[in-house]
Image (cartoon, rainbow, N blue to C red; front, top):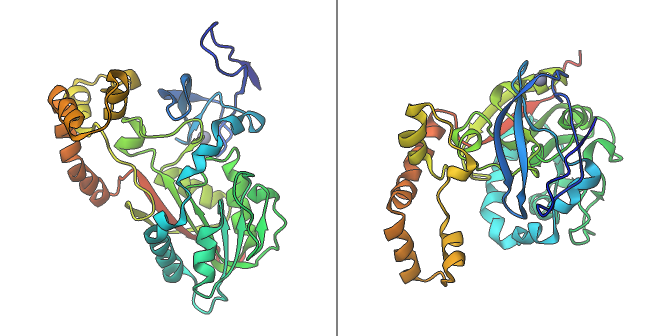
Length: 337
Ligand SMILES: [Zn+2]
């Protein structure tokens, strides 16, 4: 269903968005959870994240269609892709693979959403036969291993042909996650592992502190909704890790939320968030020097206390298994029912 979302004159923005039902259970009943803009590229364009009343899946609704989402991924979105910045992350990801690949496997890895192919290349150097899937055309050519330029569900892949399928921070970006879980089950060899990282919609950072990234993040998962996807697609939940070893989601403004909003029962809106140092510097024409940082600290003392105490909340939420980022391990059963 298409919805006319033409903004008022002078506000810019898109003309048409699509309205969708729940990707997990099919229900059309949902309730709004929060509104926030595209903070990276279009601060005047706002999106509503809703939650399915029946199963709890979170999603942007209405949302940019596949045809329209490309403008939210301009070339500079990929500026972070310098491989030397990510060696520690790749090593951490490799540990998941070595730990959860089934005994007697053949070291065949498929990385979904592999961007420039740096992670599969890292694993190739460790003796794995690697392939990648990447729908984006903005990445550099990959010639040292097979790369499928398609969405995962449409890529030409053999069934039962991989020991591990990985998707690091991918499933929150796609328009049809169910098709991704179905395909992961199909291309995994019996006993193979599907290892993926997604933001945690049950966490304070995702749900209350506006640390998500709509409309690039289209889907918002919890332990319960991931488990439901796995059950629906024949995969078996094995374990999950709440931590920042792959990606992090900083609970910025956590203390403010607790002191000013949570115990009053008032929702903290996106517009209630205090100004960031970057925006403060830009508004006053300051270069980000020690002096300007000190000025920010003096004028925003609470925000500084909040930032200093943030690691406490991070450690606490990891220990309680409610951090903003979760890595899941699922397995395709050997007994194929
Ligand atoms: Zn649902």
